[in-house]
Length: 301
Image (cartoon, rainbow, N blue to C red; front, side, top):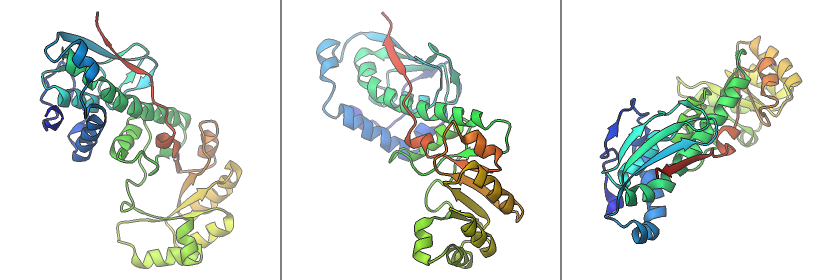
């Protein structure tokens, strides 16, 4: 069966820089399989009855229809290769490249049936991931010249976390926790279960693995003082105004504690939070609200 072929890069990649390597990650390979089974599990009846499996060879260009940060190009190429290893792929804009409107990302040359069958799945990956990278660049640009770093969250599309977090990096932002095992972040429900900010931090300090810093979410100055007294190493200021952040950050920095800001931060307000003293600003919108960008695939006449 076509979709059971396991070699991701059986197709010939010509005249290109090295790819990001994301397509070789087992979790990404499984995701590609799932996406192709979803779209091609019953075949491509339109291509079968028009061009046929023994139809002509075509050349198709994948191009940006708006300015973008390209990402997912490596994965899109893997989709074409999985569908038909005879397809040759020329990458013009490797992952992380800034591409102007009309710029080429990839040229595919091969049997028409395979190129057309892979088109939508390949575009779905590259449009979604380029959307994340492009939005991340806008946030990174918004805090340029300050000490603040913009970081993502775990609010990712199920199954896409490794790809979306890589896209965030390509856009110039940074990654927060990858998963629940990556760090200690005591949030409101942990605090409610423990009884107080101080109790939650003290328990964590007693039990935490040595390399992991203890971060705790606080919503007001009283909770901040509890966190600092208990020995938190990072405080997450949740849903505070820039003016409140300025006061809280000065207090935390005076104790050598790192400050993260989260909750309701937008492109319009992020610079205010950066200037108020935030070290990190976490933005769930980088992944959960990034719009897909406009990328097309056109067969040359």
